[in-house]
Image (tube, rainbow, N blue to C red):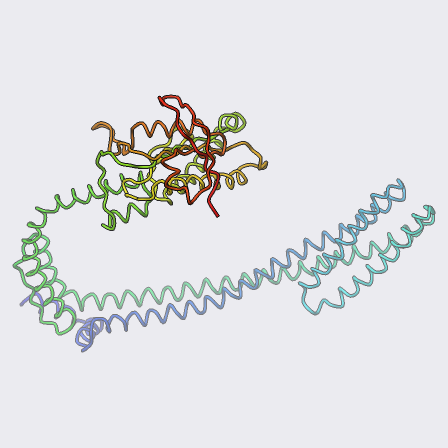
Length: 516
């Protein structure tokens, strides 16, 4: 007898075996069989969920009522205290002639009325007569209090004390008794709510246990039936999969089923054949994979290097092939800009170190963003100073204008930052900027251990000296720079100056703003 025949004979014994044979012989897809079983279980769970939601909703309402009852009890006690406090403060006022006690009486009356309104709004409609009676007692209490207060202010303390003891104090006891009655009523309602909550809890527990037991038994029976109906074809398919895992792609599954298992076996046989073919191709691909990984790593390094100097948008444009650059050392006509903060040292003496670092980071981020906006290349940060150049690695014909426009935006942005940083807008924190246009050496300069993309040359030193020479808020440029931006900005000539490290006097101009 074959294994399949043995399994069939084993499943045919008893009512459960006949049920298994019946399910296996149904002409339906595996999905429909499973969906029928799941649908039955889902209906049980849905019924339990609906019943649970109804019970939980009832319990939620009971909890809400209990919370409201608890609040009403607390409020009733506060109101009782407020009435007692009024009598106490009245006696103190009459004995000490201290008007502060009368203010406390007024505050207690207002608090009593506010609490009374809140409790009445949260109470059921059948309590309306009770609250009307409380308001009538409170009106008499307030009228008596007004008479006592009038006599007190008229200086007739003895008469005021008599009315207080004969009327006001007596009425206060009526209000206190009403508040104790309100507290007792509410506590009684709380007891009823607690009993209802416990009843709902017990019902929910019983229902969940019952539905859970039915669902568990149903799931076990259906699982047993379906598992035996599907395990025989699965065993054949598993044999092929074991061979595939072990690298044997020659095995084939023989499954006579006319359902999804038959289709699955056909696909599995095709897959085993394809895997054998693809495995051979994969070995060839692995030989070139390392080379492609190295190329990707080089591209990522290139991206990281570019984003150190230019804006992320330009770097991405270069990597997409929209721009062409060469990071080689060469001589080029560029515009170099130095900026330096004025007033930073005195400021550092007044600020904490952490605050100073945050301010400096904020400043450098804003200024760098402006440089990137105008197509500039960030060279380096020098303490609180910035060195940048324009025209490389992205060549611009108007690099001088870009540098000057960036400098004007930096001065303008610093004014805005000062208003954000300091309460006093006249806080002395400015920048001096020096800009020079001319030939420099630009490229990757350094050693094998450390390379920087930078510019060097006399014009770089000259730009640094101009930044040092610039007074707070000043933008100094040379005649070559001014020649290229003369129609775009306003500038005043500064007398030729001698700069440290520069052998001859230099004609310098101060840029004061953009033309109209």
